[in-house]
Length: 94
Length: 486
Image (cartoon, rainbow over all chains, first blue to last red; front, side, top):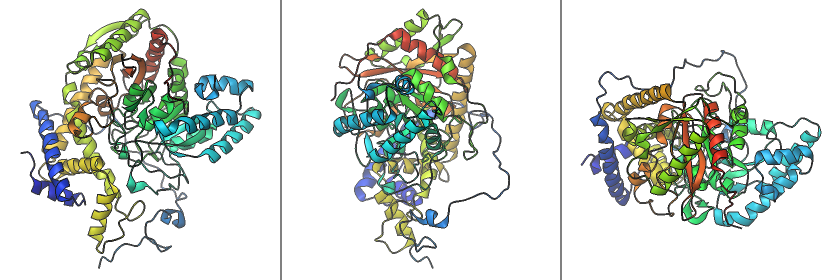
């Protein structure tokens, strides 16, 4: 086994997902199959090979430090599943 | 001929001559949608009223003599392109009620051309899939054979164009999601070079791989769409600063001096004999048009799926962290604590395929596994890119199949994620290397299912792709066929 049920549970917590017992079983089997498959990369020697970040050389994209229009608060809040006209409302944290 | 059957180029001739108005054309497409979409199931939303207003506006602009190339042309949009004031679901319950406060840059560009936006089309949830079956709302069907997949993730885009509901659509391609459905539905689909089309307003899946592109009925229309959507955009930090050429200038006959490479690894085991025959015929057509055909090798092809399903899932797990039920999208309202709100929101808002990919990606990035999975995959990605760079010293364009088989029945691969992932083997390398690719209709299987031919080119050499694609289309002389649905 590449991955155990306990590890899938731990990863699910990191990803902020709750899995039912049935989902956990299925996901563990499927993740195991997929992780076993990707092991084939070990056949390749990558010693000293740079990890690719971009297909061709690019420089960082900076813009001028100028104030421009941004989304109005009302518009920014419009899609909020719970909001009070000033901010997004979430369950009590403290 | 009904107006809805016209290509963009054909419709534009009639619009310019005054023998057809955009309102008539748009009305015709809307009627076609009304007639066939209950079977094809491509559209999630049809904005008939708004589309007719846009059409009237386009007719006015044309009357003033100010029509741009896509003026008055009705189009569909994959439902992950943000449209101001129009719900954008990304095929997910998570965004079922999301109304973007802005337009994606490509949508802005289409509106600036005076195009008519008919509505939003179905797709795999968050563009994760090869059949559009993971769409939370409806699963588009192949217009050539109902009950068969239209491909994915831009399945709704391909189905809407193939079913003659609109002449063109915009989709997105992260591992083949434009080229594969185009191939399965018998139309043209292009994934441009990474950075050529702004991703601003595209709901992100895997940011280093995602690219927006057109799906059309022929190569000429594809070039016209590319002319409209390419260009530098300060809102996308990976957008490339360069002038957009006129891609239609590449559409000329004759391939003298062109070297077309045949990558032997793309013709291996598992390739359907009918697909092989169609591509082999395509190679002969290019030879007859004057191209030099050479055999080449991309030795790491067999590793592309493994690299892709680590990098794409890692990026997805990070991109999809934003769906937390706070600022937009679905929220599970039942829970008391913040942690449970996050978890319940994500568990109910996402479907199985999205959860599976988030889990793989999170695992690949987690402490202790990063080097073994993500870093290793990124290193092999460099080797894959090097292979392409070397091959494009030997030839201008690569020819290959797009998908190893014609379309399959809906449900056939739904229970086996790895089998589904492996069907992407011929398209994902272009995304890993950032190069452009195009799928061109090549023929049909005995069962009447379309088979496409893929062309891939070096970075920013869409001009070569268009030239070869145009000659392929001309040389194949496929009889004009229309899917039989009415």
